[in-house]
Image (tube, rainbow, N blue to C red; front, side, top):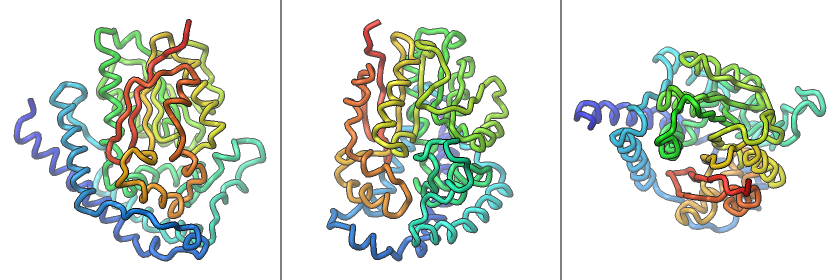
Length: 350
């Protein structure tokens, strides 16, 4: 059991993170308030989104769930590794410097500037986007350094806590197994946040990561310095460079809403292909329409405010059916604040 002091320290840390990142969000509100005429024409009447009081209630519930998982022994008391105060202030300055640039792209609907910086055919066209209208897309170190701050601002300081909810289904699968014999692969690992949480919780597990961005993998190597035994590979999830039935556990977080429907099916097939018989996929992405009716309006507005060209199709994607076609059965699915957690087990005949 956690002591009252430990619980109070956790609450103070998370409250300060929420205030910090939510403050960034409100400070940039004027850059999101004016909508291009094309957006005004496209908007349809929707139910109002949740108020601040409801959002804060949901955030509190997420943190309570986080602490409950710690008390159940599923993972250690978390640290978010945001860097020193000096580092956080420097990143904050960079964040605010990029906001007007992103706003200008949004006003002009320039969502694929990065295509000009990459030789034709070097990377998939769907990847060459200025997602969220951010400078550099997913192709530069500057973008990689800002990414975690941008995501935490978007999620009001809860992104790490949501990611940590992927750990309990991993812990359940590992029960009774020797971690040293288990191989885990994190697909689209980005800057390595989930991988670090995994290694903190399961230090003997053989974890590795794959991402299409070399710049983001360089940032991941910096973030994962305490864990030098994590191989990081540049690769496309459509063509995983791993043999059939070679991985026990696969994690995939916040990827599917950023790829086209056809690509989602290809990737699902690859995830199923590399899983060993009896393996498990732990999947997390955005909520979908109907997961929480009170948030549907906010979800539908999201791609209008942030460049997410495949998000509208993701909202209506039948994920259990998609994964079932690939041979993965959905054992569990639930909303986790603004995210959707799914646990999928190997269901293919072997």
